[in-house]
Image 1 (tube, one colour):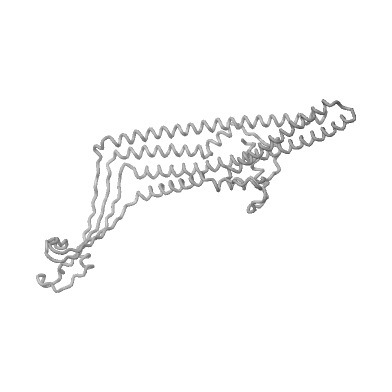
Image 2 (cartoon, rainbow, N blue to C red):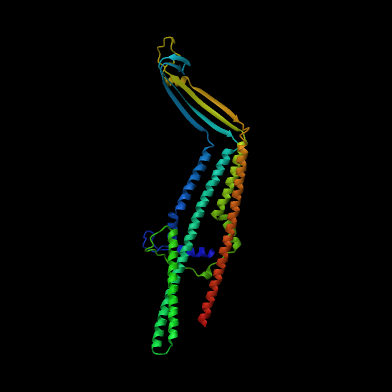
Length: 396
């Protein structure tokens, strides 16, 4: 795995082609950017992250008091209740009321705080999932990119073998014509040439399939003109393979797929605390301001209320009839058909499931790193053996 990342780093550093020209060879970085930008799963995960961010923001705002206003205006005719005088009258009445009310939770078993912390953990988990998805796409592009480079080299090797066998067949045909070689030897070389052509065809097909796989990851469907850049790769003998334990410890502390599960456990712990908070009494404070008006109201400053002559403006009525109230209340849960206890038990089950998901993520990470480390060590041994074989062949 370390070897793959080292090679990929060189690919990124040696990329010098222009980005905006589709006819230019595709660099590794450009392939990665293309795959990430047009991946629909990434776009959906980004939307999910934005949604969890809004949940987190709203849970913080839920700790604030609410404030609501109301206004009501009525027109009545006949025998109606004048809400200004609280008398039944036979007349036309134009009246109304208006007010504002606010309420705030003083204590509810810390449900508000636990909800905020739970949504924060969910938001962090969603961000880690987004980063993990981006890393997976990057690794997939890197793997397909390197596979395509290798298969293109194999096509070149197979093509050279075909050319060599063609030359051998032509040379043998001339020798057979003059009688210096038997016909059977020519047939053997023709068979080798056919085998070389078959190997070349298979190499080309494998390369084309690998190219198609890379293009599919990048969400590109037009295969015409798609060429990747061939960079200068580092000497494999200079690549250092780190100890497995150090790689595992680093991955355990930093990889987003593991951190996501950690936040998942944290979110479920807060969810359990949130459900337990339903057992607690709810203490709240409430305040309101209210007033009313009516065209039947008489100005209290009028010298003769039985024969009123003074106007009584609506604004003055609202000011004179103003009423304010502040109150506190306590709601004590006594029996809710065992719903709270059921919610707590279900939350604990979800917490245990989140812990299992974390353990599973760690186990998968450990197995994956063991496999990559073993493959890297085996590849290094194969390379060293091949280098030694070539050196011995040159000396011979």
